[in-house]
Amino acid sequence: MSKRDLVNNRRAFHDYEIVQKFEAGIALVGTEVKSLRDHHANLSDAYVSIKKDELWLNNASISLYSHGNVHNHEEKRSRKLLMHRHEIEKIKRLIQEKGMTIIPLSIYLKKNHIKVEIGVGKGKKLYDKREALKAKEHKRAVQRAIKGDSA
Image (cartoon, rainbow, N blue to C red; front, side, top):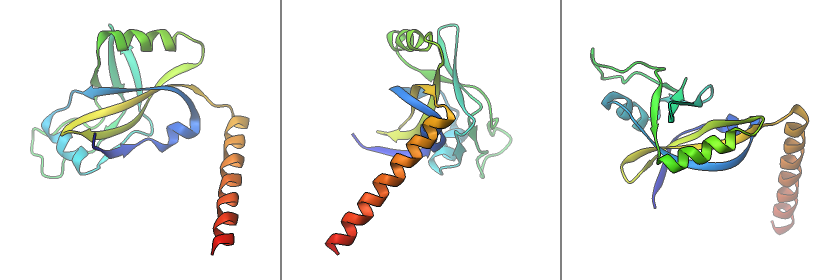
């Protein structure tokens, strides 16, 4: 399985504790695909909503294709995510829990198909973020110490 990342939402892992991840297809137009292949997209403000038993990616910014003409796409339109019905039902059950939300984590290329990795997560409190930063810094310090001993 070759997976090539096109866009990542690094902020999602800082702001949310991801409980479960899912893979979804996405309905795109031609110029959006070309723009994504050039890595011209942003997921930082994006979110996923459920309308009429369908998943929609909202507020994701896919830049206009540089060589597009009058048929270029709209930059921040809602895009339909493609998943099996039972997966959507599972996500609906997970987000009924208080504080749970659906976040797009990354857009990637898998066997010439563009996929979106979405995560169901719970928002972190400020003190949780601080703890995560402390743990990350401690891990880095330990790695530096180990590397310094072997050099």
